[in-house]
Image: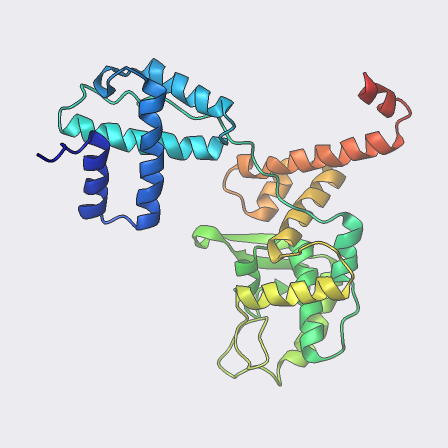
Length: 299
């Protein structure tokens, strides 16, 4: 007589046959589910409580699992116990209300002010596309635009008289951002060369060699080439100029609300990450310059 399928095997069969999950995802669920018997010991699945699940998560955390891995494991267990509850094999889901440890928020990468200026001011070639790249990167750093916002700009987006650019961001929300003089001058040089390259029906500010609007991927390729030509030894991507803009403006002004408005963040919580970048900058200056910094570290 065949051995009855275990609760976990039945749950995995449900995921495979009814929810049609991929083999990779099923393997992850199987690994996470297989942890439970070892952690539970002699306790049956229907006897586990929320306190047991918290203890299991703490045990796995002590074994070195990252907060992200713990969150995935807890999610797998929650789905498993939901399945058992639907089939009346447990009275309730013991994972309800249990949260994994918070993962440390990864700070965005930003260039130093010197490297950012070195990148955007690097003298590229005088070809139309070289001039376009200079305008593209000057504007990105001057205004902290997302790459999709850059490539979405039309010819009438920049007002040279007021020194402002009208940007359409996430959720089709429009905002006005000040533009620095170097960026305005770079865009003016590009506009003088753009017309012969553009298709008549294309209204994009930044176009490629075939006269069509640039894609975010085009910008990514061009900024990597510019970073290499400028001699930067970091992997530069378009969003890094946005992060650099935000952290540098905040370091100089301390005005978090203004940075939020210029970046187009709906919540100031999204902008507050740059206060950590600012503190990192201050800490480096302190460690390098303060005569008591090294003594304090040795305590």
